[in-house]
Image (tube, rainbow, N blue to C red; front, side, top):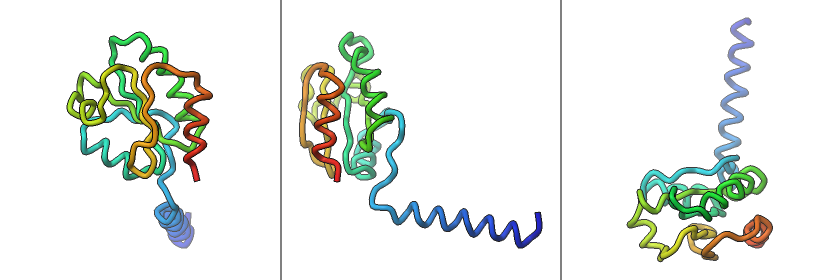
Amino acid sequence: MSEADDLEEIKQQKMQELQSDDSAGAETPDEPIHVESSDHYQEILGDYDVVLVDFYADWCGPCQMLEPITEDIAEETDAAVAKVDVDAHQQLAAQYGVRGVPTVVLAVDGETAEQMVGVRDKSHYVSQIEQHLN
């Protein structure tokens, strides 16, 4: 490669980076984001317009049933999916009034729009998300 080719490639990369920074919202990941802390949770809510939050516990059977549904939703919709382990993040769960697991919260623009306890059909979650996507 010549120096001109190298410069052109760098220029193209920078243009792509700038264009992605200018987009309205961050591109949503194709798999659930595992929340590491309260700050990380707030960062996720700030980065994405619509976030489906799954408050779960590893020992919870219904939570395990919900896991493939949340994985599909992350892959197939424009909403981000966050997973919060209630045992590891008890204060965060308490802050959102989680009394039973699984509890699914739909956050829109950083605010709770819906809160659902128990497992529902995938179509229910998808229809809730679609109501709030711009």
